[in-house]
Image (cartoon, rainbow, N blue to C red; front, side):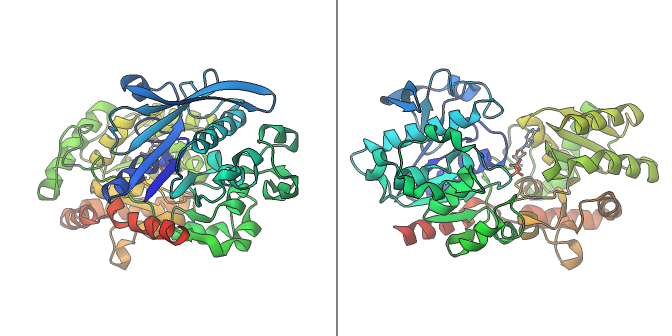
Length: 470
Ligand code: ADP
C-alpha cells in the first residue's frame, strides 16, 4: 500500500514528545513490512534539517484567508530514515527552531495542512491512505471532503490517530476565513461547542479514528477535555492500537548515547556502570536505589506531586534513595524541583530542559522510573525503561494500564491507583524493598528486558485498518 503520514513532529527531525517517536518509527516499520511510505511535516530550523540534503519536489502559491504565500515541498535526498521524508517550507511561518509555542501556531498548522492538500492535488495518482496525527493535522479530513478546491481528494481514506486529546487547537469562528472555501452546509463538521475544534473535526470527518492504546480509547468516552459525547457518538469508527517502540534506537546493546552497552547476559554489570556514570555526573550515591522521572512537567504527568513526594520520601527514609529528574514545563513545578537540590544535594538532582542523550543514559542507569500520570494516552517512557531493565512505577491509567503488570500479579512493575503523594510513596517503598533483594531484582530485570514492545508486533494492526478502509 502507499501510505502518507502527515504530522507536526518526527524523530529525529523534530521531537517534543511521544508523537515524535511514533512518527519516526511507525513509517519505518511499515516500509520494512513492504509498503511504500511517505511522511510530510513542517520545515523547522532544526539540526537535522540543516545537516541533510534536500531536493525540491514541488513549489506552489496559496493563501490563508487574504494572506497569500509561496511554499515549497522538499524531499530528503537519501531516505535516511528508511522512508520518504517531505517538508513543507513556508518562509517566515514554519522555519523556526521550535515545533510549538508561537502565538501564530494556529495559522502555521492550518497553512501547513493547506499546502499538503495543494501538493496532493497535483499528484498523478492518489495514496491508498492519508494518516493524520493529532489536532495539528485534524482539519485535513474535512478539507478533503468539503473544501471546493480539494474535492478531487474526497475519495482518499483518512485515519486520524489521537496521541493526546487534551490539546484540540480551538479557534474562534472569526478565524474561519483561514479554512479554504467550503460547503457552508457542512459548518457543523468543523464545530464543537461553538468554536472551530480541529481535533473534533478530525474525529467527525476521518474515515477511522485510533487512539494510542485500547485503555485510552475507552477512557476518552468518559474523560477527554470536553469531547466525551463525541467519542461516545463516534465509537463505531474508533479503535485503540497500542504504540510500539523503535527497538533499533532503543537498544541497550547498541545505544551510542549510553556509557556502557549491555544485554541480557550482563545486565547487572552494565546497569551499574551506567548508574555509576550518572551518579558521578549528578553527585548521587551509587549504592542507593536510583529513581528517575523524564517528561514534561505538567499536570497530565502529575509532575506537581513530585516535589512534595520526593521531599517526604527522602525525609522518611533518611535519604535511602536517589532521585534524578529530567524535564521542563510549569514554572512553579520547575522552581519547587530546583529547591530540593539545596536541601538534599547528595541524593537528589534536577536537569531542567530537554536532553535526548541524557534521557537514554537515565533509562540505562536508573533502577526505577516514576510515572504517576493523571492522563497517559500510551506512554513510551515505561516501554523504554522496560527495554533497559529499569522497573516502571506507574499509575493505572491509559497505556500504562496496558503495558505494565504489577509484580504482585506475576508481572515486572509496580502499579498504583491514585496520582497522590501517598500512593507514590507506597510504590517507592515497595521498590526500595525489591532493590535490596538482589536476586529478585535481577530476575525482574531479565523479565523486563525480554518483553518485546517493538512496532514489529503492532504494525499489522494499522495495516489491517487501512486495508478495511481501502
Ligand atoms: P508525551 O505525553 O510527552 O508525548 P510519551 O511518554 O508518549 O509522553 O513520550 C515522551 C517522549 O519524550 C519519550 O521519548 C521521552 O524520553 C521524551 N522526553 C520527554 N521529556 C524529555 C526531556 N526533557 N528530555 C529528553 N527526552 C524527553
